[in-house]
Length: 78
Image (cartoon, rainbow, N blue to C red):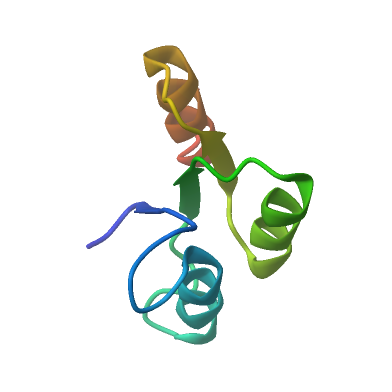
């Protein structure tokens, strides 16, 4: 089973926003939380990702504590 999905906004063939949309439309993946990790830190990208169903958004460069906190929060490990 998959507990968590990470995606970027900028990817070849399909951007991360389209990926989130497709995951949330697919019964097999729609309940799996998705965290976006991206250099794109614009308000619109963040807002759109969350509207599409992302559970969180982390900007690159990653900080260890930041990513661990969002994983714990998303998976309710806190």
